[in-house]
Length: 114
Image (cartoon, rainbow, N blue to C red; front, side, top):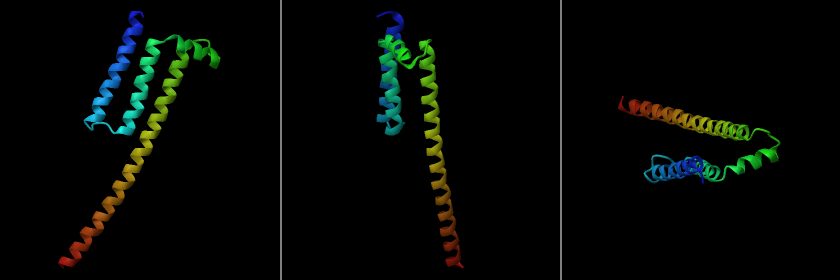
């Protein structure tokens, strides 16, 4: 195993360890943590076995293997951003409804005081 493969493998394993620590300390929710654990595992796998990228590129009909890696990375990140936007929209909707309920309760309390 050459130095680059060793470095990328260690970085993938280190990333997985950091993610597990963040999930354990409740700084990262389990659902998002699972996504990043998969990313770290793939980084470790591709770091320790770089010929896999070449084989996958040949199967996909891509002549420059790093282009496949970049394409997949961009697609995965776009999906992650879309998922985050959906979650943010859901949370904002819940917050808006909660604020409306709170305003109704405050108005009701104010009416009872008068």
